[in-house]
Amino acid sequence: MGNTSSYCSAVYANPHIHRRKEMCGDLIRISNMIHGPWIVLGDFNDVLLQSEVIGDSLDLPEQNNLRKHWRIVGCLIWGLLGEDSLGTGRCKMADRATKGHRPFRFQAAWMTHPLFRNVVHIAWNKGAPDVVKCLLEVQKDATSFNKKTVIRRKRNKIHGLFLEDGSWAIETSTLEMAANSFFQKLFSTREDIDLDAMGNFPCPSLSTEAYQKLVEPVTS
Image (cartoon, rainbow, N blue to C red; front, side, top):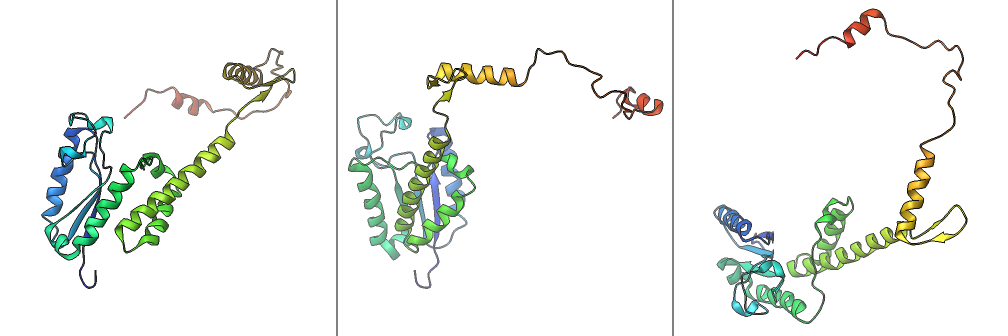
């Protein structure tokens, strides 16, 4: 914002209320270290007003009864510098959540994929410096990334097997039995094994001294 520096904190709050209290404490400590415009945005897993709730109960946030899935909170200084942009950001997120669209949910498993960090980096740069556009680009690319993972997983999944008699089987129980039988035969045998098949082959052996060390009591 010109020569003005600002701070942004991303929040993904725990659905359990006692853990959310810990987060509030963390935000208070951070606020004491920040001097200047500060915006906190993300999924707070909580409501600000009764009107944000679908139904009459505020007691069970775990039931996903929130009408607004994203919330943006800015300090007073940020409001004075960019009140219009802050309000627009809040409305865009709220509208997307209330028009019947399937809500976007960040999957923690994505963070374990080695390519996902780059997906976020590229998507964020597409929308910079507009924070709202950055978030929307990340949402779009993350959704696309998840779909291509799903496609690869479906492609690699075994949908059926040819059995020993040449028939094609797709039933789960039959596939389990076939796989179990295959590996049992692979790693077991009923044939007699000739232990002297290699003949009189000189094998290295331990000296008496080395053998004694192996059977000594274990020391610290």
